[in-house]
Length: 305
Image 1 (tube, rainbow, N blue to C red):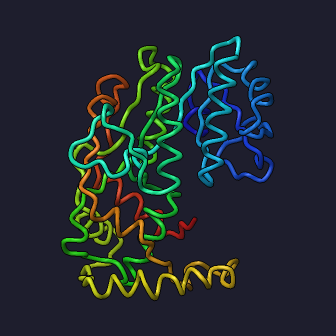
Image 2: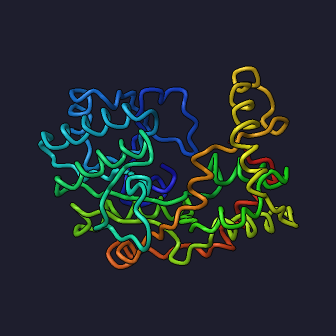
């Protein structure tokens, strides 16, 4: 919203079901809108030239809202440009160098399947641009910049050996916002999908080291297979069970659970090919070390999500 508001060509409207209670960085008009209501979406789309869908939530919410948006957009007399935020998770277990023609397997669970389902539907509409970001980091990133920082500082996460040899397809949140703006502006982007990730991704071990260095949390602790298994099978579930009790407490004072999906990602050998985004959208991805330094400064100054 801040990036759109800063332009001289966009007048953004923030819309969601809970928009009245949503904190925004900019003062923009707000619209209360149920993203699963086709009729309400149709009415809203009648007064705008474009819509950016950043829906999060459970798998069924992602599917219902995605289907509703695409149906409403297809019926809208204004033929609005739709920019849909998908995810690299839509590729599921695909490995190797992956461009936008790779199959959308969606076989990494319900979220992965939901993203793959709507992603595939977007490809049937010529006015829709689909963005598939990788690991979105930067100020405000709950997992990749806040919780990972806590785990590194607590020495509960570090060098995972062979389990951390997968590629970490990082992309700075500002680059994702820039991609959204370009997707709204570039006519030939319609009907296309774009991967968004740093062209030279580090391994997950490399990411942990470089982020720990920016945080002043070196030396990086070596995490053995036994220690990781203890985290996943014993400590993590215990912390997860305690979340209801700890809710509302200072998050700095309790530990995060290392989730099984995080361990799976760390060993996943997939490299998003973002050349198409560079060529068609004209994106230039932020230097990783500069981005991590900025993110660490945000965290160390009290940034929490």
